[in-house]
Length: 534
Ligand code: XMP
Image: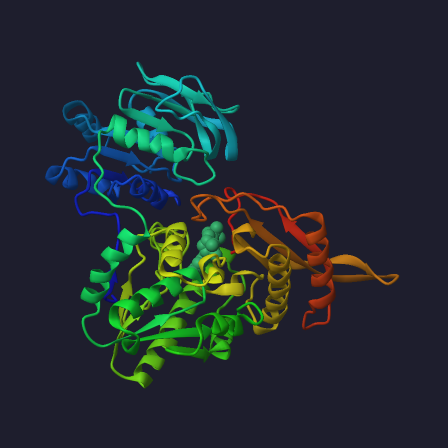
């Protein structure tokens, strides 16, 4: 396995707060909210908790959401007996979220059953009793089981139209069917802070903010990379730009090289833009488009589920990135480290099997370079704060994220060079129009892209009926805990949408000469949709 140096700011080997990870995509956000509230956490699998608790008794335990149903034969088991022992004897407070809430209620004698309708997306929570200043409001739900009755002695504190028991508990056990950790849940952090400080009586043990983060990251980087040079993979996004800047400041510009790789699936003109933003000094621009096209075109796509196909694609793209970095490092000479802007969500999402991020799950087993990841403990919005603090260009600070495999995730299989160029063009048009309409990057949607969707459809060009393709335009709103675990769809104003639609239809041409006959707006939030198509 590659040697990793990961700086998990805000996590501790033995923390006051333990998060039992039951497989939810948003579990990393629980750690983020606790860290923001000034409390360090430790995340672990429920099966590891007994061993941990024998050495250190936590003040609070979160039981996260997850994909199982408590009645599944193979449902993930929570250490209920141990949790109750700690709760009764040591006052450990417990917070169950979604699956965690159902598992606690079920184990305590409540009834959980399949709901007649899944409750997914944003719903209104009405409070029966205000707790800790939390007043309810919009909450993000993502469940298909409901609580039919509470365990004896437990109380109902809040409900939604479809869930009678959406917020409930007893003494210092708090359960929510919704996700308070998600940015689209209003005031979720207030509820978590009440749990941490009033119910669990935690003490503040983490200093938040970019200044404190940078002060801690400096010794981490100098210890992780004591001698030799470093290449930093730089996409042009905020994560990698912050990594580059931090490593330059700590190790000195002469030891650090930024490498921007054109992987053949970037938005049109993107490399030139990164060049303008990051300059030439200490930067290497590598055109590896052909290599990546070949890599993708060799992946078997026939008779395969898209999930398997794109998972393999992420893996292969990841390996290809590393081979390009290592080849370049050998040519420079004396390079021992690879700096990456991998963030907390990338790591957690890959570890829980939700998305195989190329920069985590896509790393080859054997690597020549040691990987240094100073941002491994931070979420996107925290990285933006660090970028502001370091004085990076506003266009970088607020730049929308892009997946490492870039636009290759934004087309139907097989991923080919022929499809790369119309998608690149459509994305450039979208980018130009969004920027024109919203000169201040903070006003733009949090993420937006254009994708080529499969299947041809009828259109009318001139007086003739023609068949052509459709381009999907997806945009999501910025939320206060911008982490992309949940997202609300962004609606374009009419005049902006008209220009986007007209320009994409007029300017995007496919290799087979077929026109684009429709531009479709993707108006579904996450959950249930993902942000990327694949
Ligand atoms: P989803 O599609 O899971 O995406 O809602 C959430 C965020 O993650 C980014 N993303 C990726 N980033 N490699 C990356 O580096 C990947 O394979 C990948 N897949 C998704 C995506 O851009 C969005 O911001």
